[in-house]
Length: 291
Image (cartoon, rainbow, N blue to C red; front, top):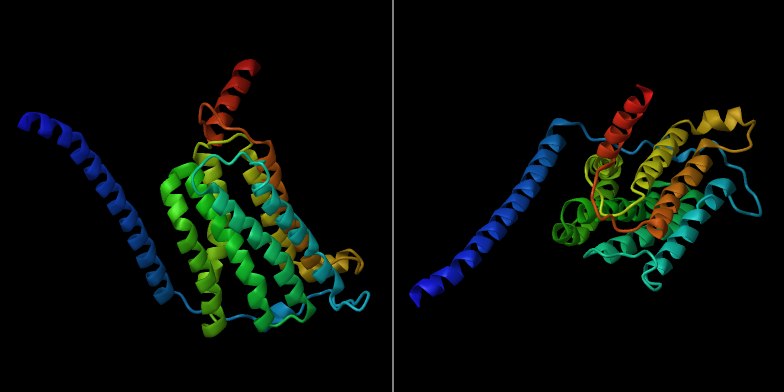
């Protein structure tokens, strides 16, 4: 009887050990990330908000709306955010199958819709106080996307549990900038996903088809950042028809558009293969056909 009890206990004991090891690894990852962030904050100088940032090239007023095109070009964010939010709950239209996905995508589309409102509010009268309501919803979209990627590509449970902490990190980064006039935390929240998501999309095997849409979304966001940087030159090149910042809004809005198309089209993959492996196999096949 004792031997039977020990036999039953042994597998459970091993399972507990595995769970403890995984938990310890997760804690270690967070500790390393926090330590790296603290070190980075000590060794790099603060980045204050440049007040010239608020001086956009296009100040034209239409229909009584100041900075009209920079305001109106935010409307697509609101539209796609509302549509995406509705489709998340409409008869499982997006075929979400993993734990936490619904929560992650819900926050993403809330963030996108809120960007449309917050950015419009900011561009009516650009200043630091209003910029908070532009950046805060953007962090909701950025951080929820990271959580979704963790859920899909790394671990469902860890990704689900990371949604709220990541959202809080995003909110704190904006508040830190507002109270201490230091953009470093916000810059990390904005640019880490720009690097991490394309890399993970290429390297890690997906659960669903149409994974390349992630790269299209990343490409449009990169284009949007370029257009933002050359706001005034684009305004001059187009003979004062449209500014770089207006085009930035339109290109950035293509990110949720492509992600929504991906969600609508995708299916569960039976054999998980990363994009990198697919490209390697396609390259090998092309070489063989060429020979």
